[in-house]
Image (cartoon, rainbow, N blue to C red; front, side, top):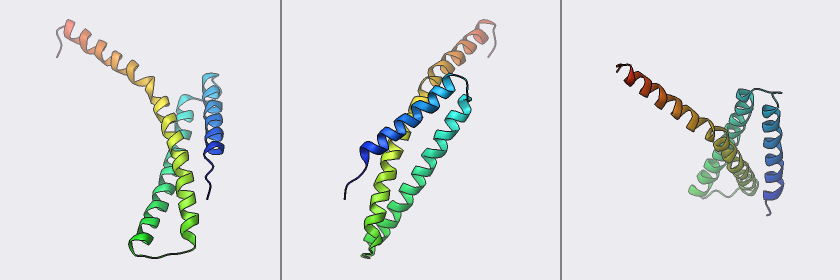
Length: 117
């Protein structure tokens, strides 16, 4: 059984780049861009976990069904997709974290200078 690592990877990278460019060019809001990829990571997670737990149950009880190979295939395919979408998820939040922390730090410092808590 062969898996479509390259095909899935290229399609997802192109899709992410497309939505990121749409966000950068102000065709869609950042929240819509992030929401889209959050929904996709949720879907890939649920399918991968559902297939994985089903396979685990079949193996645990020694049940061999013809659907097991098909289930394994989709479990891995959605796992590959989830890997890429997780990287996109990190990219989406990576830039926003340092800026927020520096704002919080500067707010705390200005409060201390004024004699606040």
